[in-house]
Length: 216
Image (cartoon, rainbow, N blue to C red; front, side, top):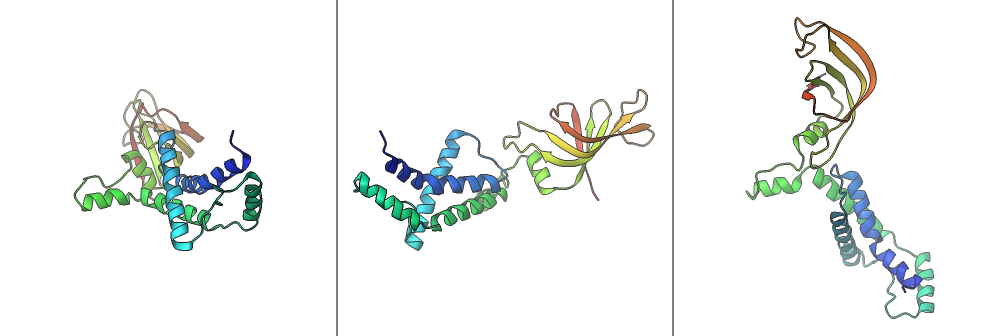
């Protein structure tokens, strides 16, 4: 059975890795959700933080309890908590921010393209790229039956694989063709009626034929 001081030592050991991964996942537009990649990132941030903290600042985040008795370990933990260093936590957060921005701007893909190892220049699918680069722009969603929906995309699905495409529009207005007209609306010669909708969630994009971006 693991004693409390041993568990505490393990927690201190992995805490910078967890913090670095948490910050990275908040900054990055590509959320890591699967268990194995998450664990891999935690280990990476843990090693990077410890190497940097010890190599540059001479400060590790956890006390050395290997040769201590249980009583001695408790005393060392108590003393350690009174003089704990925040340096590894700051380093971990800095690494998380750095790698989050590198991921957002597809730096690795651009380097590989420059070295002619790859032709890709972005990590994003077109869906993610459009809504990331054109934030705040109004859209017109056109459907197969001729109706259209105009609004401001407050949220959009950021699934990295592009399997889930959803939109949440604010200040939305439906444009509904009058009569049996099935042409895109609004267009010349087509009578439409506007129906304010306020806020609209589009959970299924299978009936969408196009999404237009409206310039100011």
